[in-house]
Length: 603
Image: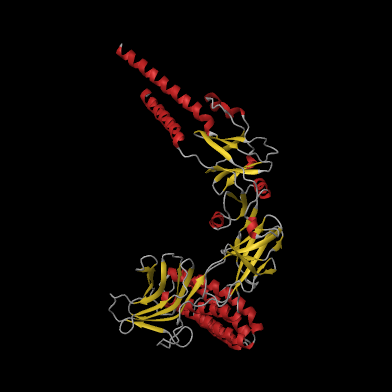
């Protein structure tokens, strides 16, 4: 037992001495006084974007707003710039004020009197005189079929009954679509409220049908219904003419004149016009670009904003399809089409492969690829994205997916993410060479759109030029720093300052990393170094914060702290030498006890 304790103490002693030796050769973390301090409202990812931009040069520090109100206020009041990122993107709210109502049903399809329910519904629809009322009835009866579907699945009804319910639901959805289009032609004003209600109902219907599709084998029936949903939603979006609006929310910590900056990106050929041509709306005030900053950011004219929540709204122009001939009206062979008159037919006998190039491709942006397809017979199609490597110019295959087999028209979606190594991408739809059985599929409405959102920030400028906000004119404070021990550093300012400043210690932030005014032991006396901090009081905790997202920062006001020399110490330093001494004593005592016991045994 004694040997075990001696071994443990030896290991601890060896570790402690090793730490001391390592401390003498380890590189000293940088200690600096930044010339420019930026207060950032945002998250870590947004702060990283700020650092990678060309805003700052020389010695700088950024403070990311946290939940400590006192420290936030302290740093904000003494910062050189205030940068506010959008807190979140606000989704456009739908204006229909109603709620989704699924009716109660008394009879299920297995009931002998169910035929009466069907007759009564058809009679009610034919009796109404206006499209507005007809749309309401079709929505009601489509909802009833979904209630019947849920209850029938719970009672394990036969597949024929389930199919008949789905067919009834699809009938009312298709009739609803026809009534919507007819009502829109006759009176847009009367049909507008129906459109809003239909959109909300269809989105809810879609969730229920997708659950059925996952849990049951009725894939083709569900796919057909989902396709009708998609057509209705697309028609609503087109006819209603919704602008492609993006809304951001900002939480401003103080009022003042702010300048909007939006990162410049190359999206040439992706929109029908310049997204910023009509300006941007900030807090109900329209602002327009006035120039750029460092050729990286668009600069808009300043706007006065109050403290608290503010909104920014940007209306995007229509997207351009980045593949030519994606509608297949000129090259299609089949009259079975989703839109227009023709669709593209691929088969193993005649044309088993199709290629379409993505135009105006920017490898640093994302793109949404969508198309409709339908399997007529045989094997499944492969969806492939090919391109060239930027450096080697060799052909590379970015993705290959086998499309699900479906007898109904179905929509396929794929997100092509940023890929700096990719150039000249193209979409390939093909039957693999190993497929020899007779197969055929239809394709229609292939669209590639840019998936892009602006990167806007607000900077408090107070009528100053944006460049001058990030270029400090403060007198530089030089300093010398030295590592005294494992967890102890001393800092000496070469020229004192009468203005408050920030001191940054580039080591991982810890609340127990403390700054003491003055030096403990200028002559580096050992006993003074061991017990020096026990009788000193560190800078108050409210002046210690996380700088640059990871480091230790302190705010020093010369009016409060009358020193130009400081000691940085981690609290472990207080117990390092005493602990090492205790371990040494225990180690030696253990050896003495062990030696005495051995001498007794020998005598």
